[in-house]
Length: 344
Image 1 (cartoon, rainbow, N blue to C red):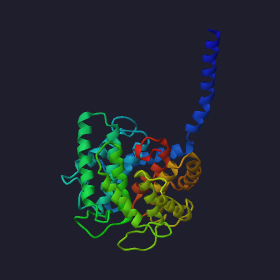
Image 2: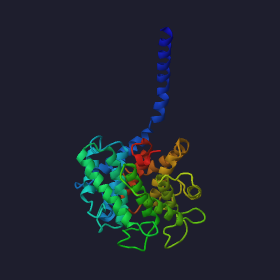
Image 3: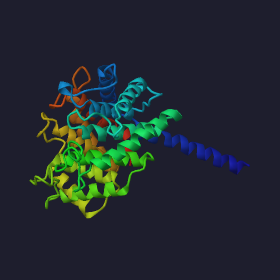
Image 4: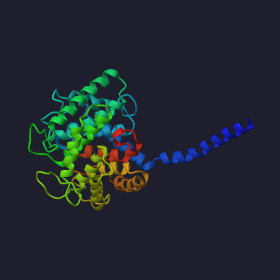
């Protein structure tokens, strides 16, 4: 009996001793916490009554709504719980209401609508995984199932996607929209929505076909040209999502990124390419483990925090404050681990 008591006390002591270490690992930099709170509060304030966000000039409503909604999900809010539950719910309502019979989430009049469609699949699939209401789950499943069908029909013969469906423009595809579709499709598949494997395989082949000898991914296989760091970083993230981590092709892409992607490189920041690049590069670094992630995150944190305005928004780039703020808030919250698509 005395031996058993000693063992219990010993186990309790070890548990207590281990708690500070575990807590320390989970602890957040208060500067990051404050920055994220200001950013998410800004997004909550700027959401329209109809539930959407928009870019400069009223563009990209679907894409901006999905990106901003994702940033709120990263905080831990859902459609029913959390500080931003009402905002998330209104964003879901807007996207579901704008799901077309064709499966397109959005509308063909929207500029570059495949971006919005891909990001909407990503956002709604994350919501679907947490939805508790059976009727709402059924509605989301129907929307996402049709969305996957639309993406399949929108894919070009080469395996990529353009700014619009291949039915509307059959002879054009490019890397950044391809990446958006792959990640959205993979998120749907992870959430239990049926996604034919051949769609992903064709997209992976397209990315490989777009890869230059030095490992960069070009803008489009149809226009040729050199590799582009932003699209290459995005390609690595999408290949990871597609389940390809250690292939020779992925290693080649990573080596290119190691040479050409830097947190402290200001090239493209005023145009918005820096934020696009690191939205995807951060996902890659996080998946590579704490040693890689912690070093990268410290650099990103020190880059981002000084540039945040008093309103909580970041103002760089030509797309608009919502875009940059949603992306930066997502980067700063990746290690919260709430969204399956970003998890290790």
